[in-house]
Length: 362
Ligand code: F6P
Image 1 (cartoon, rainbow, N blue to C red):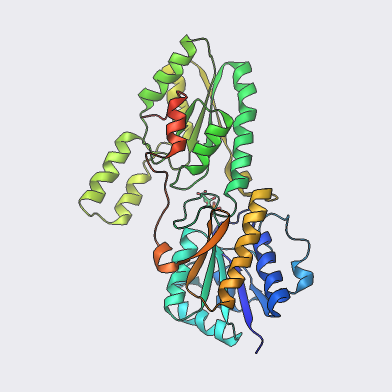
Image 2: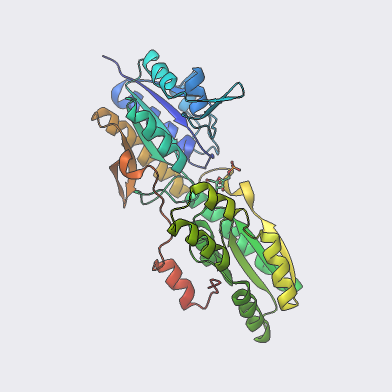
């Protein structure tokens, strides 16, 4: 009997999603003759039965396109806003998948999507996931769609900021995405030659940073590039969070404490006050997620897409298809959901930065 599969993209978009949709769809059609449909706007489209048929025509010409042709959303199936009320719609989603006689649903997403996919899988929905996030913070995979592209964009930005910082003898503080992980900032900071790199995994002290900039200034370098992760926190705030976690305080208390995080503008103002150098702020924002995927992301998306189809053909459900060196592997969703892949303290990128005398703020 001909199989039918569904595809949805959830969470923040990232370059490479269309390349993966294409690879899943093409391999499903060419190798197996399956029917392929897409749900619009993530889990909301699954709840509302909004579908598009992904035939060969629809899958053609999308390899290089940014974003996702399916649309995406940050809805949580167990906490959906339905007409102003928050409702658990997981059962409705399982029923809708059955209504379309789906043999499998492929969910492309990041940390949140993996938790949601696991919930649906536990309700009996046959699910395979594909890791996607520019933050590179997904557990169990060597890489995730969009990270390489975002890294290229952020690195180019750090490069470009050098000449203007140099010309004006300024500090330029550049804020880079990454949620609570420092991969993008550390990578772009190293690749772009930032003088200071601040990531959530290494809490900073403003005094240490200003001393490093003052030292550069006394050595004749009257400009500095500070790459700061959007999730970077001060040592003081880190100890507040640690205290809450050690006494088993609720997650909401941690979240409330983190709202006290210094903004990038505040960091710049404090560095200006302490060093006497003029400072400017550049927030890269969503430009890091926009546009065409890099060649590495296209290849990753294509290999993961084909791997997703292969997992379905083998009847292996409830797994994420992960990048594993040159190849792929299947990791149970139970091992991925709720876990994060942060920068370890002994990671070679951190050690490399320290060896070069880059200030990490600690
Ligand atoms: O997870 C990807 C990401 O781009 C994070 O780096 C960032 O914190 C977040 O999404 C931004 O989300 P939104 O697109 O909803 O503003």
